[in-house]
Amino acid sequence: MDLIIKPTELCNFACTFCSSTDITTNKKDVLDLKYIARFLDRFSQTRTIIVNGGDPLMLTPEYYWELLELLSARGMKDTIVSFTSNLWDFKKRPERWTELFNHEQVSIATSFHYGDSRRITKNRVFTEADFLEIMELFMELVGYRPDFISVIDENNRDRAVDNVRLAKRLGVECKLNLAMASGRQKKPFLISDIHELYLEIYEQGLMPWEYNTKQMVNALNKYHTTCPISRSCDSNIRNLHPNGEYYSCGAFGDDRAFPIDFEKEMVSDTVATPLAREITMQSMHDGCYGCELFDICNGCRKTIRDTQKAGAVETHCNAMTALKPRLLKTAEEEPYRVGG
Image (tube, rainbow, N blue to C red; front, top):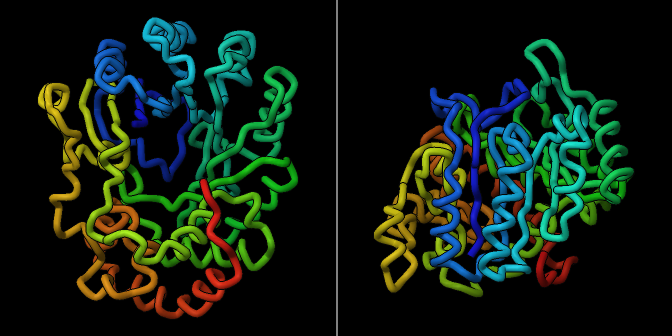
């Protein structure tokens, strides 16, 4: 089991695309560590605690030292606390975070993409120069450059591959994520559009530096190795929000959709998979089940739901049909990669 925690929804950036903005009017809530402790008591084999936000560095380091103490008290020395942060507070106050970030159970990923949607303030764009300054400071004080996430929408798609070229230059891995329809982001970036970019990355020889392109190759090579309606992504991950709300998916957690009753699951003999009961989110449409691209188009119920709600299923399907020859050629050229 993995656990995503959103300890705060406060953020020191003012990004125009962010799915974590405008999802609550109360930004002051802080996730009580008692909820995490109770989760760990049930799921003692938790592999990773993924910390996002908001920005997690809006809280003090002491919060995370207490979290590490929860792990230590339970003998969970192999559990990793994995932060995703813009690292702006680290840039301003490195002495505050350096010891924590050097802890053997802590890992860091950060975020950057070209364009003007990632903003420090309403009027100041987070530039490549800002990003490189943080990366070099992190290298100096922590000993490595972190991988980074780039969120892609219609406004920055023309520079999407430049993010991967930057990752290659820095010797790190980039993860191009499509913008989902949550919070301030009202319109989803379609799966067909992001896979056209993954194909471009593959065809330009940049796959070693982009995480999701590798996952695309794996999905193509796993065609029909499992029943397409028995997906159980929500059986191995959970999400806690600042007010203690509990979900099986971080993306649906941002939508405040399909919550789980924490108390009932804690005393159950089985791990619930509530999303599996949502029949309309099993596939884009009924014709998907015999298609070689089933896992590509239907791997995530949140993107299925976003595409359906946007009335874009036909647009998506037509685009994927046009991409199919290139996708299947990629599958023929690339072997399945264990672990992605």
